[in-house]
Length: 127
Image 1 (cartoon, rainbow, N blue to C red):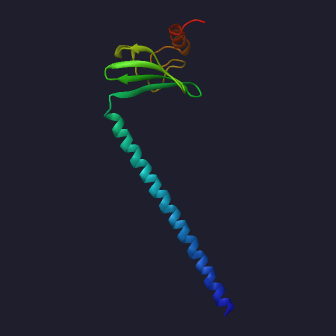
Image 2: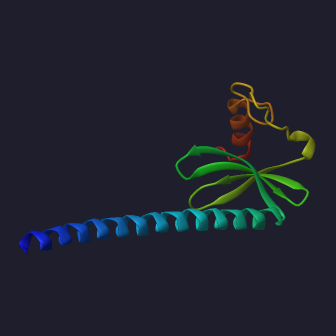
Image 3: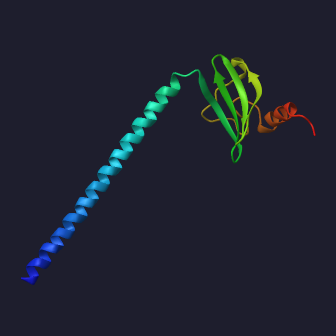
């Protein structure tokens, strides 16, 4: 009799293991599909707006330079944790698409980082 109860408890344990494993897989699948659905929804919302981020360059932690399309105007802005500053405006002619291979050391405008940094430094007051 003890052997029969041991056998049934082993079967119950295996059944519980498969049940928990099945629930875990279902939760993972639901999470995956909901995440994809939310990402698709947000992407469609972003496409219908008047603002679009063209390019982002990370300078340091929480410090970025971005090219933003606002209607027909292209703005270069500096972002930090506490501030957003307009650096300059660009025309559509000044923007260039990045080629698949990309020019080494050059950005989308065909300028090196040093050239862009020099232009940005001109906009800040000297100490």
